[in-house]
Length: 447
Image (cartoon, rainbow, N blue to C red; front, side, top):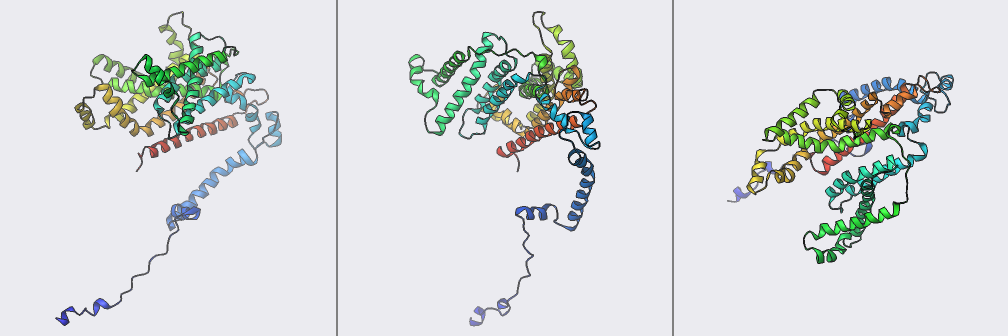
């Protein structure tokens, strides 16, 4: 027994392990370079080759655009005298205000800045975690903000209804920020203080009625405050530049998704009339180029309206762009709907949900999450395609850039304006792309 319990000699022998490889630094800028650019011999060789190629390609452009460029000059001839081989950015700087605002009067451009500033302020609550009812804030932004923006952009005499709705926009925005402050300071929402009074009149939907009462009171207060303010009228033909491009693309981006959803649901409908009407709209619009749709909207759309309705060119273009964008968005939405398993539909029916509740509460939220990359890609494409409106005579940023070359002081200046607006488009499109990736990570769509 003693010999059996004695351990074997080979088990007590020390066998050293092989040496471990050196620790690879994977943090910091140096670690990132080693991991991504110089991780192996072939990776290092490829990195060096790419940098050499970029140097050969970018060197002439950098010399033209930066090193030999002229930034201060009064005419293009003066630019050529200073540096004949460099870019003449002085012309772009001289026309920069027109590239942004078009022919909008200089002394009234504060109205454009104020309108876009209010739009940015309206978007801030979406980034705050404690803000509730973000969907309601977004829907009311789509409904109310265009009335306020158009009142500031156009000015002049507007109808009483237009003026009241325009006053509702800042009133609602003020109510949203008051509720945000009350929420972060631990107090009740503004409408909750009115609920005891509302319950004396009606015990149903007291929360909604209290919020509506606050909005109406603040709106009437805004009407009283701004009743003496008169804005000078600025006609549509004075609008232009990046300002006009953002308006057209903004309408297209906002309206494309609801139009696309309705057309996609209509195409999947079991009602023959709705189904074939949706198919006809989608296939007809997608079968022709956008410039054809724009020309048809300008020439043929007035024939479908009474003579008493005077449609301006901008309204016709916005309608055409929204329909065109909605038709393309419909196929994107339809692809997302087809990616949802049939089990989801059956589960919704098993709990007694109807068609619309199934779509709104179960199907569309899942489909829209899966379609975020495609939707943002369509938005970016819409923003770039709006430059086609310059062909039908609207002074968007592309047409304003072309007009620089026919200015007597900057005659023949073609490349620099196009490079400048390309840089502006890159900034906007890259920002939309980065927000799309942020939204995907926030919704945990990326693994």
